[in-house]
Length: 442
Ligand code: GDP
Ligand code: MG
Figure (cartoon, rainbow, N blue to C red):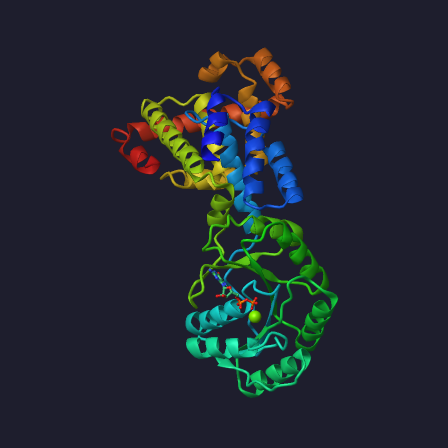
């Protein structure tokens, strides 16, 4: 795939803003990559569409091709999408002891293994007392399997009583967890090869008698299309709170993760990485994104190019400041940096003597919207005007303001700001051959 992709991407080498055709060409390859990673067709389609809208018109970093730039944009979107607003994927809700955790999923997805892995983690990492119970009354020796794993990891399992229904076992687990002073009890349910009504009903009944704090759907990371169905049905009927993606130690590219996130909107919390009891880790969106896309080299190439350019810009700017030069091009670059670094305080706050000014700017409502309007004003100036703002007399001002769709008063404010910052730069330049500025910029 990489070879073929490289070929297509190399053919696109012009610079500037991404054109629609740059984007479509690159996205066609990305689409193939997603499908090869087992992302389901409708999810891949929707995802590509969203990225297409985002990518068109964005600037291409120097020394990378438009195709490479698109791949980076896709990658960042993937990470963003997979992460959602989930801050700590590895945290399980286990307050109000005993907290029930319900494990659901198809047969062979890794429920029993994952139950024991999570129990071990809760015990060792969080110091919790955990009780595990197998509700799998169908597969011969399924309950013994959990007991063996429990022994292995040093976690208690509910004593096996033959002939009880899944719901009866769940009730007994709850009672035992309460009486025994456990923090958490985990219910490992039975799976089927495919979803069927009886199974769903049983899981629903268990849910109703235990009211789980977490309902974790365990899905085989090697399954592609099926994962969507499974996730959709479990979430629709039972309601899941998170997903564990198993077998990510294999060659699977993990497209199921994207599909399930898209369909359920529920966070992927853990990833299973083998049969051993500590082969589990919390979800890292960048890792899975890289794997799904399979274009890690391109992503890091673009990141490096971006870093290099930022460093070059900073260096150039510093030299100009030392000479006391600060024109509209410099201001524009500063404003763009501010947007990127999350506002005025981010950038100016790092420069000694500028903290106060940053605070003032912040108070004056220097948010992204204002910054973008100021950039629009600068963009509507000619090259000569940008380099030499003192050229700006009334008629030019009117033209510029009109060009940006703004008032002249706003342009005046911008000019004042440029003058003030220029003065400040001059002062700082004089303070010993830029020693202070150098410090601030490094
Ligand atoms: P269940 O039917 O859903 O309870 O599935 P099991 O927990 O019994 O797991 C089925 C098989 O998958 C077992 O042989 C496990 O060792 C294996 N398994 C589970 N999780 C993983 C994983 O993350 N990686 C690998 N390689 N194997 C796993
Ligand atoms: Mg099992």
